[in-house]
Amino acid sequence: MIILLSNDDGYHADGLAALAAATSEFADIIIVAPDRNQSGASHSLTLDAPLRAEQISEKSYYVNGTPTDCVHLAITGLLDVEPDMVIAGINHGSNLGDDVLYSGTVAAAIEGRFLGLPAIAVSLCAEDPDHFATAAKAVCKLLGRLTLKPLSTDTILNVNVPDLPWEEVKGFAATRLGFRHRSESVVKTTDPKGQPIYWVGPAGHGQDAGTGTDFHAVEQGFVSVTPLQIDLTRHESMADLEEWVHF
Ligand code: MN
Image 1 (tube, helix red, strand yellow):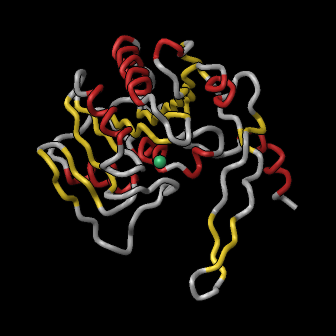
Image 2 (image 1 turned 60 degrees about the vertical axis):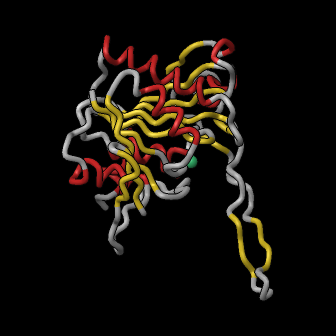
């Protein structure tokens, strides 16, 4: 099995190194990751500038682009082999609820959905996380499970791991996405010339964070596993809308 690894924290990130070390016991690993921190890049592609892939070692590259650029480039021309799956992470910080819309980590996994196996995005839930070994072990357990009992290949698994030693993790939980309260306000300040500048403020706390959600599972010490799909259509609104547009 060939696994393509990427992330949004940049090729130098500790989370990516931990993921590579653990998964290389199962599979041939190829790393294609951004040359800098691209957290919050969402699913953007670079269309107005050329991409360059710098080879760091035999199976490791960094790219002057977004996480989506990295995976797109890797599977459409950079590599001379076709990976079987993509794993993105281990993100330094959670990707819970509406975070998945902004996350470069989740986007990198989504970009790998054309490959032969489900794609996995994995995030470690703390602002400055410590237990990368726990998240790496969780991924290895899921890989073992996928080998024994495959999931549909168009599945994207969004995995969030509590920042705890492995012995304190309660197990795995299948979850749905919760959602957050509105973000906190932007932080307004001034540049050295006195002009106003703004920093995007922190994400809101969990609003829909009850039983069954990703927020709740992580809070309770479980590894949260949420199946994602790409179809954003609100199917239950179709009948109403069908009538509404015919006026
Ligand atoms: Mn990140």
